[in-house]
Image 1 (cartoon, rainbow, N blue to C red):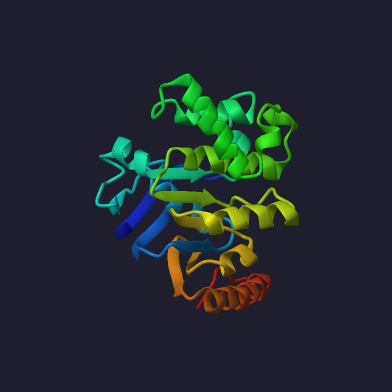
Image 2: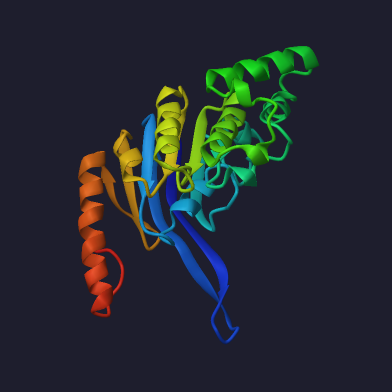
Length: 248
């Protein structure tokens, strides 16, 4: 369970003349996220990634409170990070070892100190994702989809309760997007996923539409996605006429 209680995020910013000012990234976010699969959609710069980064303390709220299973990431970050795994847009941002096997073994090191058991478990986890043949290949020789599946395998190796995925299909082709979607479907963990892939969003139990730092719509995927398409079309015409943003 993830709770946002009147959450706001404000950051320092600079204008073209170099003058500093505060910029509101999120405002007045009050949500309870309990569904198994939750999608977050919206335009670039709308606040989707910030909303997700609050869950495991990668960013901190400047007002209000975020709770994850009753814990505050701002004050209890270590405990929260044991519960929450994060899958980044670019898997190379989180893959640090030479091969997939070494990556998964690294994830298991704290919970499985015996090297032989850790090695066997890592091989089994890679095999469960169809990656056994790639276990000892350089991560630099993998496709984008293979890297993303390795990153997900590493996250799931520590058995988190919640997985946060920040635009995980952005760099993937259709086949690999389908593979990652299937992997998400098979997970037992709660998934909160920001995405521009509306086919992926349609597979969720609930979808949030974010614009200008606020959740402007929330509900059944088909309805919210249709609303997003409509409002983006309207926003495009509005910008052409000198306006901006989404109005619902």
